[in-house]
Length: 254
Image 1 (cartoon, rainbow, N blue to C red):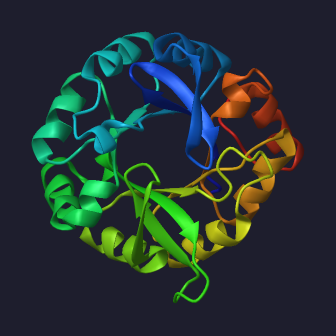
Image 2: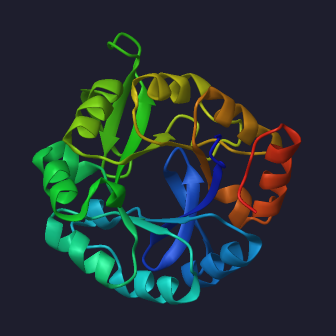
């Protein structure tokens, strides 16, 4: 049986406001996260992803109050990432309404964190967030970055994803920094490469600019598609994306 594909709006939050830029730079204000979350819930979003994009850079925890208020307004799975460094951080986020957590920089710095979270809460709670840049000359051609895409590493993206899955990551959020905010479409080569090595669901992120960009990401191997600016600007609704997917013969949730 074919599983229905998910459409997920992403709320990139800094200082309590939703922001968006291009290639993770020149962030601009897009609105109140709680209000936007409610709009997307009403439009039929399957899940919400909430990323505190400056928490790691600022060396602080994510904004728990915004997570709590968002969870009170929407009744679909909520994934929260940014500034998560320990199982205690995960426990607190779950206690204020998160259903899943996304980890990136802290897991790269200390891979055992993946094991610890999965062992305590289960793989279904843990989303490995991957901010990926193209790196010609490396084994796969892709490397991961940390600190909201600001710090490059030499860690091969596919090797790290494979290791994290073995350690207990239950889902991969694959974000192309090169495509992020460009609205030129998803990085299909990156999605296909991740699908080939992943035994867990893959969420495609970065580059959506039109309704017709989403079906190719599914065809490349994504189980879910995530976007931000096209939704925040009102250029597309969740329904527009689902209608386009259905027109391409892709099953979506009602």
